[in-house]
Image (tube, rainbow, N blue to C red; front, top):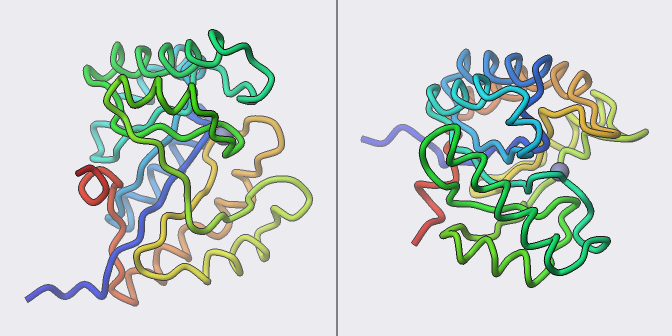
Amino acid sequence: MNASNGSIYLTFDDGPDEEWTPRVLDALADAHARATFFVVGEFVRRTPALLRRIDAEGHDIGNHTHSHRHPWIMSDRAAREAVRVGAEIIAETIGRLPQFYRAPHGRNRRCMTQEAEKLGACCIGWDLSAVDWGPFGTAPKIAARLNRAETGDILLMHDGRNRHNRPDELMRVLPGFLDDLAARKVSCHVLAAEFVT
Ligand SMILES: [Zn+2]
């Protein structure tokens, strides 16, 4: 008998981050939850061991470009390269290309999506954002947003401190949120198993 009441899909963007990614990983491990991390290539270069830890602990890794530059301020060639190099750094570090690509700032640009698809990844967004950044990224507001999650949702959060992100505020509520999901018998899976056709 399947005791689960359904699944949700946790995603964490803009890492890996030496300070915050290990804390997110510890919280996920405590809750037996799996997630997908959309990583930035230049941060992977700084902390390759952290990417290998994410992989070794059963999570999936997606491409969030090499530089996290805004898709609309690059030339066509630079935009394609940002996607390709991001994928290559992941492959060099964990031995396989990512199956998913997520656009920086959620701005999908056709040539970047095409480049990701050429490399075997599909482009994916999210259903519910924790808005764990900026002035509205406070723990109570993040908790209220996360509590609206329904089964089947892809949730957007950030483990990387890149720019205005508030992983410190997120971490005040993430363990409790994961406990609530477990109590509701909602399981957390990587995107890979469910979305690749
Ligand atoms: Zn991002």
